[in-house]
Figure 1 (cartoon, rainbow, N blue to C red):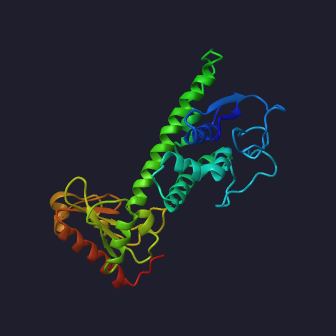
Figure 2 (cartoon, rainbow, N blue to C red):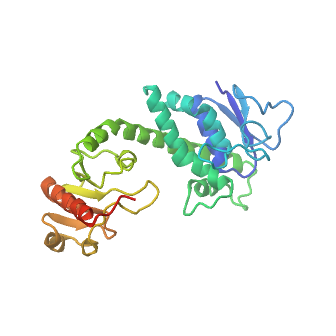
Figure 3 (cartoon, helix red, strand yellow):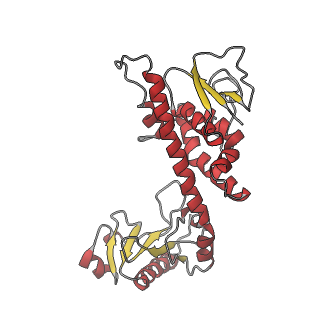
Amino acid sequence: MINRIYVHAGTFHADDVACVSICKMLNLNVEYDRITRVTDLDDVLADDNVIVADIGGGIFDHHGPAAKTRRDGGPHSACTLLWERFGSEATKAYLSHLSGDDVTEISTKLEDEILFRIADEDNGLFCPGYTLNSIIAQMNPNWDDGCPCAADAAFTEAVLLMDEILKTALKRYVSQVKGKEFVQKALAKKQNGVVILEKYVPWKDYVVADPDALVMVFPSNRGGWNIQMVPKSMEGFETRVDTPYDWHGISGLDAEDKMPGMTFCHRNGFLASFRTKENAVAAAQHLAFQKEKRGIKNV
């Protein structure tokens, strides 16, 4: 069990903050210190009890010339090195009810979607937008705060925020995995690329992996039913089926005129709402048929 972790002092980043949060998953009472340099007393090769991360050139530091590469080919950071070693244990410690396969899938999701992104930006790769790294960076004290202890207090606040981010993500991934069987049963019953979910569950991870899935049909949490075009990949916004351009952004009677029962279509066309399930299924089948008629492949 990790009882103490050392990370670097000075300006903190999402990377070293995440290292502490990961250790807190393993041991809620773990102690952490921020140090300016590693001494002979600090074992940078240790991976139990007392560890050193993001400083000192050890096994959980990524700054040396022989830095390791992640399984996706990107550069490691300290938190991804730590997760590579302890991710499954940390996931299981926080979510003790999970089975082995689910632990692996959920641990991998957190690594892919959060920790690898932290590592990319920490290594200087361009990450557009307002990222987790930039949010944590802004929690550092301002130059004119004037209190020597401000950095340590701010670091503690950053760790508490990171705790909530990682734990919330893990709980969401549990929900996704819980719905996997439900989605797979719906995929097995799809007709002409139309997949019908009798209740909404997170579907994208599993549906995108099926190249024959074109349009999703599911109940809306605002009432009625939605159709959503299946994206070509998890990364982009391109969809396998396109709605007619004259649907985009319409609502009310204008929508009804275009397709029976339609009440709204998103301005980008990827989602439309309908009064009834029957309306939604008919629209989805129409779109899938039009795609097949044109002979367009799912690429």
